[in-house]
Each structure stands twice: as structure tokens, then as C-alpha cells.
Image 1 (spheres, rainbow, N blue to C red):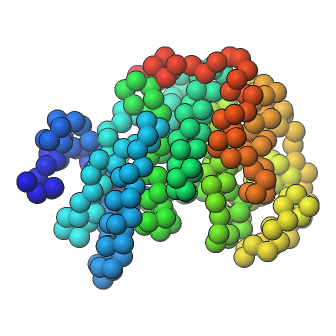
Image 2 (image 1 turned 180 degrees about the horizontal axis):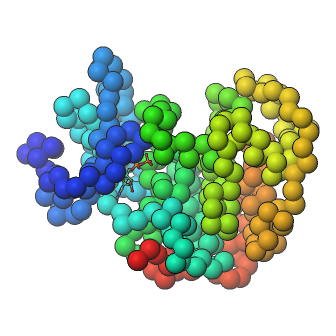
Image 3 (image 1 turned 90 degrees about the vertical axis):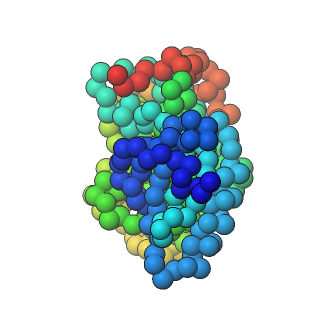
Amino acid sequence: KRAVDRYLKREVLGEGTYGVVYKAIDTKTTQVVAIKKIRLGKQKEGVNFTALREIKLLKELKDPTIIELIDVFPHKGNLHLVFEFMETDLEAVIRDRNIFLSPADIKSYIQMTLKGLAFCHKKWVLHRDMKPNNLLIGPHGQLKLADFGLARIFGSPDRRFTHQVFARWYRAPELLFGAKQYGPGVDVWAAACIFAELLLRRPFLQGNSDIDQLGKIFAAFGTPKPSQWNDMVHLPDYVEYQYVPGQPLKTLFPTATEDCLDLLSKMFTYDPKARISAQQALEHRYFSSGPPPTEPALLPRPA
Ligand code: ADP
């Protein structure tokens, strides 16, 4: 049976960074799946093969904290990626005004996020496009990271679709300064922004351009001093900024505990070399001190 005949196409779920996403039934397993149709450039046959090979490697990236890539097949000049279907995402949870998130709930969501990051970083795979709607939530409340590794394979998602501008709010300062070489720290910064968003129930640093994004970061944490971040001045888009002082984290997040603020500040470290790793973050006392994280099945979710 041809790969394309294995799946019964149902409704469109939405339009994402790379193309349309469909709901479908996998006739082989009767499982409900989400199929991401990725438009590939026409004249770039070589790229397609490279993409296919690299995507196949992503199939090996299996963990309960990662959306499983079930199958990959090319069809009519598009690449089709078949993923396990998920009910909702963290963005829907954060935006839902009927949902109250307790400190234990927030701890649970951010712990699951960091577990997914730590797993992929251990395998040297970066996400690069972490945002609340890439954190999908399954039927038992388990959070799983979606779109891992896609950004590198298909290039930086172009920002053609208006909703894509929101990804800027999660960009690490080194990316905003045009760093060409960067590491897992970009995902940790994004996770910190998501952590902050869980606490505030609105996006924390809402820049309306890349420059403005840096401005928002500086207004919160203060302009970085070269002593804090040695390599900063060598980054391609680095420009000197007028000094602005930061604000105490306690003022920015009045409801957060001391442990929570300490972890947050370590994730929001300017110098990516000094920034806490996902694994270290999981070992932070925030996760061992009370209250314990809520069991996934008991987490509040949209009706
Ligand atoms: P973006 O590029 O903005 O992250 P995606 O391409 O990931 O968007 O997804 C587009 C739409 O498809 C979204 O509405 C998302 O909720 C839905 N979607 C993506 N992956 C899945 C999945 N595994 N299960 C269910 N819905 C999904």
C-alpha cells in the first residue's frame, strides 16, 4: 500500500509555519493522527532529499515528552509528516480565562517542558521555535513538544503568516543580535518566556519588531553589561544601547515564590554560556521544594 493511501484525510486543523495541517486516520493502526504538509521549493530537488534524510533521523527521537513523528512521505512535491494527534496546546490553556493555574500546575507544565528540552538537547537536537502553541497537550494531560528539529531542516520558518510574528516574543537575545552559532540556550530562553507567561497569563516580552523585542528584554532585565556577557559585542547585529536599569524580578512576578524567581533568573541569563541548561533547571530546588507538581491527569484544561 502506498504511504499516501494509508491515511484517511479528515478536516484541516490549521495553517502552520510550514503549511497546512490535517487531521487523518491511520488505517494501519486506526490511530488519529495530524499530518503536516510541508511545501518544498520546486527547483530544490537536492534539498528535498537532504530534508527527507534528516527528517528520518527525527523519527528516531522518541520520548514520552516529544510528539512522535510516526511517518514521513513525499507526495506531489510536498513532504508529509505524520504526527500523533493531540487534543489541545498550552496556548489554549494560558488564554482560557476560566482556567485557574495553581503554582503546582505551573510547576507541572514547566517541568514537562524542560523534560522534553533536556531529552532533545542530550541528543544534540535544538527546537529553535519554542512557543506555547508548540507545546501540545494529550488526553491524559501530558505535555509534549512539537516541531522539534524542523526549524533547522526547513530553515528558519519564514514569517509569511501573520500569527508567526508571535515567535519573536520567545527569541533569545543572542538570536536578536544575529548570532549564527547558537546552542540549546535559545530553547531555554524560550522556555523561560513560557514560564513567565504561565505566571502572568499573558506573553511576557511582547516586542513588535526585533529591535523592540530587545528593548522589551532590556526594560525588564536591564541592558547587559559586557562583563555579564563577553561575546555580546562580537555578534553581527550588536549595537551599543543606551543604559537602562532592570526591574527586580519580584516586581515583575509578584505571585512567584523565591525558588521560582531564582530558577527564572537563571533561565533568563543574558550570556548563553552562563545560562542554566534544561537538565540543570530540572535539578533546581524549585522542583524539589513544595508544592509538588500536579499530576498531568489532574491539570486543568480547556472545556
Ligand atoms: P505553527 O507553525 O504555528 O506552530 P503548526 O504547523 O504546528 O503551527 O500547526 C498548525 C495547526 O495545526 C495548529 O492549529 C495546531 O493546533 C494544529 N496541530 C499541529 N500539530 C498537531 C497535532 N499533533 N495534533 C493536533 N493538532 C495539531
